[in-house]
Image (cartoon, rainbow, N blue to C red):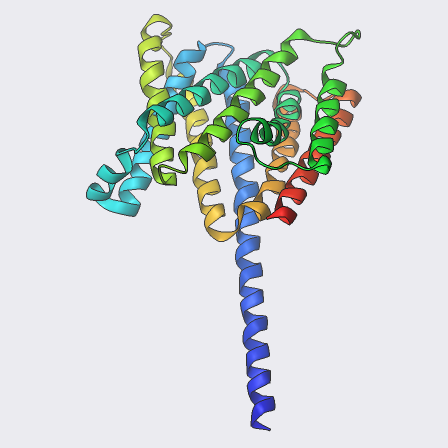
Length: 309
């Protein structure tokens, strides 16, 4: 009788633990979806202000806000003494090189928003995780099986459906977000390498501060003095992007990356919605088909990586 009661108590405890894990995972997923909405909101604002203000000025304001956010988070978590440890990088050249790649991606990404529909840009940039898989095999010598290589090829086929090279609907400007996706993929590979030397907080610090310093040297040559509305729009874009990072950081505290990553593709949904609401943009049938192929390939790649781990 006592043994049965003990077994019953253990089963109840196990069920409660599983329910607790499920609840926290759900919270993480919700936070990730909110983060994607914040990122897409920032993109919508950026598209608007990019028609008036130069890209260096746009990025300068964004990285001021992001730097303040990153430093504030570090102070909140570790205090002034801990901030000194965050700033000290064990591989500073790698951190700088990685952050410069992210800045290049931001330039290409922002220019893409200025010239192309928001949803089209995100549909092409969605290929980035697939590029990471290919680079991981070629650069980091990670084992990538035939199934994941097949997913990579299918993903690139999806991009070709969107780009339609050689056909009447081909737009050379689509190469901009494709280059942005490649730059972001290289950034992610460098982030994996830098994680061998420095923790996440150090990497976050340099992600905000290095681009800000770089753009600060450029912005005096491109400065256009904003009016009140311009300042509000520039700051709003930076705040939305920073909020996206904020919610995503907390999402990873509640759920594992493998649980969250598939929901990063909700960014496409938000981008399509905001593009339609604010700019009367809607992707054509080829972009929709290509995006579905790219997303399906990306989800399958994530599934294979999760199964392998």
